[in-house]
Amino acid sequence: MGSYYSVKDYFGVNPEFGTKEDFKSLVDAAHDQGFYVILDWVANHTAWDHPMATEHPDWYEKNWNGDFRPTPWWDWSDIIDLDFSKPGVRAHMSDAMTYWVEEMDVDGFRADVAGYVPLDFWEGVRARLDAIKPVFMLAEWQTRDLHARAFDATYAWEWKDAMKNIAQGRADTGALYGYYSANESAWPADAMRMIYTSNHDQNSWDGTPFDIYGDALESAMVLSFVGEGIPLIYNGQEAGNTKRLEFFEKDLIRWNDDHPFQDLFRNLIELKTDNPVLHNGAWGARTTKVENDNPQKVFSFIRRRGDEAVLAVFNFSDTLQSVSFTDALPHGTYDQFQSDATITINSDTTLILEPWDYRVYSR
Image (cartoon, rainbow, N blue to C red; front, top):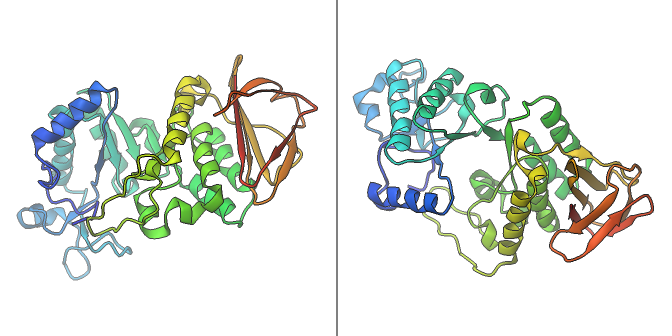
């Protein structure tokens, strides 16, 4: 109980959450409000008490002693691995995913540890799902080949690692160059990468965003929205949750209805929605480095297309910084995010940024 991964019925609903009818009502209500709903899908392994372990023991991988085994080398004691060389496994998993799209009208899946499942399975099931309706597929993995015929989006773990090292003083702005360079040079233009400052694993095992990013947290969240990538808001972030949620226990989030992060996320969503240059993948504009005279401390870029542009400047240090721009790329007049102010950027402009401060401008 509490494990996100120990599935005992791929066609069922945990009665603690309600019934299938309740779930379908939830999906319908979400659709009525313009939302899409995707399910977290755990294909690589099941709970020990899944009926398949009794009915089809040959569908599971075994250890040297012939017993069921968790995923090798990890201490994932709550699960046992399926064997995708077995046609029955593939058929059962494909049928189950199809069921939730066809019968419950969900809009896609987030595939847990997607790289541990054969790519040809994902490609086959994607084609089957798209024949029902267009779906959105997110892989918890970081391989560009997944985007060819299976997934729309993958995780961007290197962004999280870079931002964490900057926030904790182990790196300067150069830590982010690798992500943005590779994202532009090595990944397909329509490959969407998911960015996050917190998720279920990080919250439980590494700490809350406040623990990890400290005073850099707000800047990190803003960068996740204005740079390339799909931003994830993890449960409780909009309420400023300061608790590390228990992994194998039922652990409720303490909801705070008036935390300032609510307005920040609302404003960031509005900014990203209303500025096409901030849209995801090939539908938005590239994140282009803006040269400045303080590049190790101040991270600056622009995303522009025609007359539309968003310029972002971050002081990724714990001291006051000044910055001027050394080329004409950012020149122009902009509106400032979360402010009524306008600013004209030119060769004489110098910005003063407090520690971990940021400026976002749009036109």
